[in-house]
Length: 271
Image (cartoon, rainbow, N blue to C red; front, side):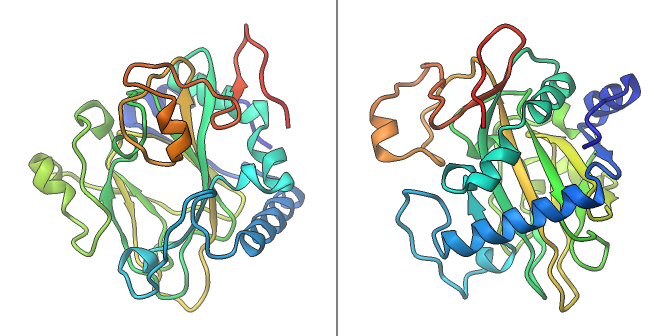
């Protein structure tokens, strides 16, 4: 993995809210990631979030935006090895300018053939903590192109957003009802070759195009939470049992749910 970040990359991320790292994985590593993700999806089946009961409506718009499976690290040893890599945590910490990094959740976001576009949205308002330093990695397992649904970013919007958001629905510009000024901004596409990755701030406006091809556009992602973040009252991925143990303002530090994967002064969870 290409895990050493330059000063220019860190500064670009902090200014624009995202950075693309080309050839992040070697060809051999890319095959390991692909095999691990395919295996994890096969064994997870139709359960989107582990320990959550829900029915997936195959005709719903959202379920035709991408195939989504969350926290595969919790029930697949191959994904656990990949996601708990402290090198990833160090990269996230360096970009965000924080000391320690925890996994909030990983998720596969694979656009199926002819998938709907991913509407403009923010990530962090969905989560059970608020942080202007939260971020995600997005690893392309197939070439992500203008034709099959690559990411689009609105540079600098992470400095302007609050925790108001819009859902990912058929009106891809709903976020502009919340932030009208964004409708006049120019979006930047981020096509990537398989094995490349991006990091983006969790308050950055972003989306993805439709998949206008008969092939898949697979991606493996992971959301990162700065160590010391506190519960905001939202359930998100947390189970009823976990929610019962938390009150607003509590530090989220359960390593079974949100493992600490990088910190220069604390013991970290190992794969």
